[in-house]
Image 1: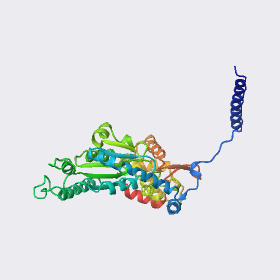
Image 2: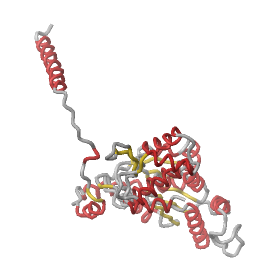
Image 3: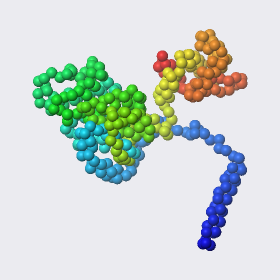
Length: 365
């Protein structure tokens, strides 16, 4: 038996004992911090956005070298596209420059449509029309004799249904199996494309015989947007881990900054989304409170009894219990807060500026 083993055990025991003694000593004081996250003085969003461009970028040479190293994969990616697969890029860092460089250098023989999925809104119908128009132009330029014959459908236009356009993109064209359009989607998991309907349409576009899709994802749960059929049959992804560590300059423009105080526009938008998900009666109760607050800006809030009386008069609630259920829902979503009036009565108020509240009432139809 090694005599040093006993020394090691004693040392470990001493460390463990000191750890628990330190914990006991620290908890014995019984003092807890009263600080809250909401107490942090956040910078105005406009000021912070103005300061962001002034940040000196780091490791530019290393990032450029890393992105350049992926050029060796371009020929493999092109081969997989010709075989009917889609390309899905993931990994930390913006992949916008990488995908655009691949499209401009390796996809010159094909039509390319770029979709910025990080934008606040994306019109899927317009995407289908654009892809169909690019394919039409490509066929006219590359397919001999196609202009002289009658195409199956007229020139793609907004007047045609999405189904007709998808039929055109997936239709069989004689002797033109290698004629396809490449759709490059920056952030296919972007906020405007995360709903099920958008992903279903993108999957249908991707499985068209004359379409190849190249996309990037950045959200950790992006794969949950698709089911097994969409991944393996429609998108037919080939996954590539291509971290670039490049800053999300373009992608981050439309996202709220964590260290910035939320502006009125963002707060109003959030409140509107929540209210639209509630029942019409709940929305009407909120309107009564909002109108009272705008008409009595100097008061600390609307007394609960007053709100109950007005709601009863308009047949919005039948009892105090019903009103309380609405108020609980408002408070859970932080649409309404409570504070004590000088006379000891509980008052309700909406934590929004008057301008934001007026805009919210206008948009809440």
